[in-house]
Length: 383
Image 1 (cartoon, rainbow, N blue to C red):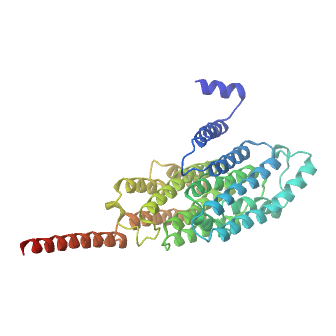
Image 2: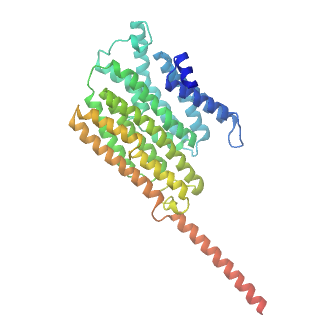
């Protein structure tokens, strides 16, 4: 009740209130410095959260662009400073140049429209009169989500980033592209059928790539491309049901994907490998982790009553009124996304693991050596 009165008095929205509460909680926890939580690491995370908070709460489109691009800097520092492998350097290069080069047309369009309409607020802008201008304006958001054919930076950044960077990247940073696409879709008066086809086919290709992965973290990263294809498709349709579908999909993906990244880190911390050959049959070693692994996999594949299920339901309600071809291809995309979620769980929790075989053989060898030493001591005493 107190929160509702404060929101009514200061005219705050629920999103801004939740961001403020989360930031306050995170800022409070960041001062509790531990041995494995250096001050520089917590400072970078706090600065990243401040930039994200400003990005989602600003009303000016120029400031949105500035904070949108500044959020790249702490993320790149996280990848370079706390990455696991030497490949973190080219991964940060991919992440930087893909996002910066794609955002330059948006900067020129913002400057031009601000000078024409004498305002940086989208409410005072007119519709984009050229289809190419709209495509250049949303190019930065499409790469940030990302759309297929501009997704090369995402698996590299996810694989090389530390677990905190992967969770923030999957939960919040990818949603900046969806939020920007939601803001500018009201200025579009054209039907983007070609781009919709690219999103559908790209999502299907991403699901097929997921089914061929041998690395747990790479599979989760490629699954983000498939889910974000749904988000882009719903935003481009620009109707009430598909917009609601995209918002629910972004919220659900932020929860499920970041949780899967954290659980994959817990598996990696215990067996020091992300390969499916070594992470099989984990249910016999870590049953509680596999329970949460199964739960997040089911939520990720759209099992009711998850947010993914309602997102897909809203999407099909809106798509049925537009095009039957979109409905058919979207059904294939949903089926393949369920397939790679089942593949992710079954390949890690069941099967024959080389790690477990090695562990059992080492234990048997130790038991045999202890038995042999005890027999030799007994024989010596008998003599």
